[in-house]
Length: 275
Image 1 (cartoon, rainbow, N blue to C red):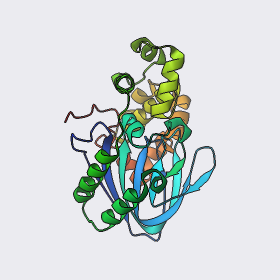
Image 2: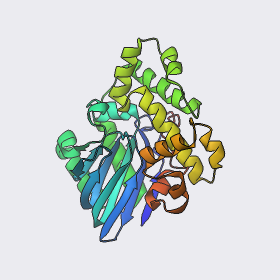
Image 3: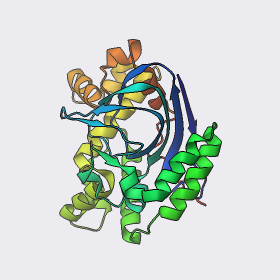
Image 4: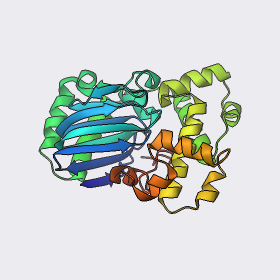
């Protein structure tokens, strides 16, 4: 199994947080992925199913657009499985996908239906490359050609939400409402549209993911638990958003999940590099 990460260039950093290339030549690959941001995944080899928090399952497709996750999901793929992916910023979801993110949360969207023949041609070209750098260069050109503009006020809202989530290990929704000169109803509607969930769920999601990252990086469980009401609350929240308890994060964590929880990969809240 191989998982490589690559930072996007400044030209697409407002759309994408990270590129990655996953390869496994096992005949069957089972795993768990944490509640994630929106993704575009190019299935270079393999096909399978995803199993979502509400219990429903969906098949993969050659170009797979995964909506933002509201809880951990499981997957099973008939290998060998090779996949190139791009993790999207909320602005990137709006500019590239166009569908309100909350309508596709915990869902798979057929990327060939969204991107058409140009997407299919890109997939074919990616299958002819071997390095994450060459694949990223192809995908960056494609994304820049596809991206639509989104209203400046929506861009500012997305950046305000990012800063709100990044500013505290336990952000509070009231602070977000205070920071945006809109009614609370408008804020919730726009946050749903770009982030795929209302502010309260984002607060829970990123607190749990931060806690899981800290524990996976060797943090003191007692200090991490201070972010929650009590220890049982911490266990429930981490289990919901990562599929693991704090104990299994340390002892039996899925290897791909371990990599995506590493501080180097967990950068959804990092500021975009300016072109």
